[in-house]
Image (cartoon, rainbow, N blue to C red; front, side, top):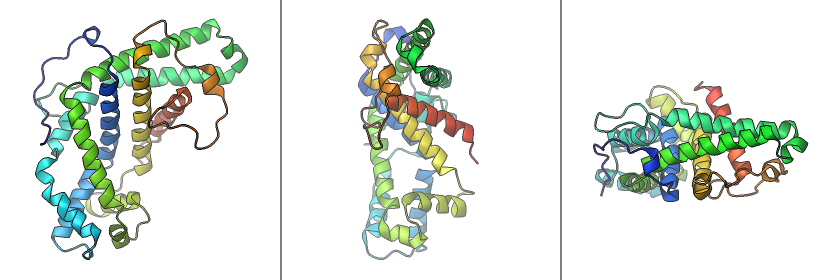
Length: 288
């Protein structure tokens, strides 16, 4: 059954709600989906389904055609574009939601404050590692800024991720899995001469949806944003306790071999710093 995003009451004050790890993990999935929405992934798949129905896609009787037919059959069970926009507005304060939801107006400010605080803290460490590891007053102040901004952001997102939002995140993830399986199908990629699903998305955007999008930018924003929120989820208990130390200088400054860690599942402090830097760079790159 489709999760409907309906009119919600006013948001309670942050102090009335604990930071819940599961709520934050749901928001991480929604944030990644929002960036794929900006890349028009859902619109691309809908357009491919239309082309398939009109007999304009050279697909045989292989898996691609069956996936198309299954996607069409399951349409009533998926969230609509309007419901997705309402979800993004409620959770992330994104534009485009209907009047039935109260947008999360604090998100952008809290998000940028935390990402900037993490970036500033990391740059202090790398500028003078000796003084940084001695935990000078300046480093202590910067760490406190990270802690406070992280607590405020986590509390905000935990509120946004409660209740029906968690169910919506699960549904959205399943829809994205279905889209991924369809877009990376060998037969479908062959019809577009594409080596991967991202090239299929680029070609459909360019040819059928009014112009290409910066796929690398939105993929980076989505992946980095999800890592940042998952770090908040992993540190939910510590963020709620002002005396719990966060951000290890040793972890951040330690050299790292390629392939270390699992940033999308259990990000460490270095993963958080890298994700913040990647997010800031992707934002600065612009849509072009």
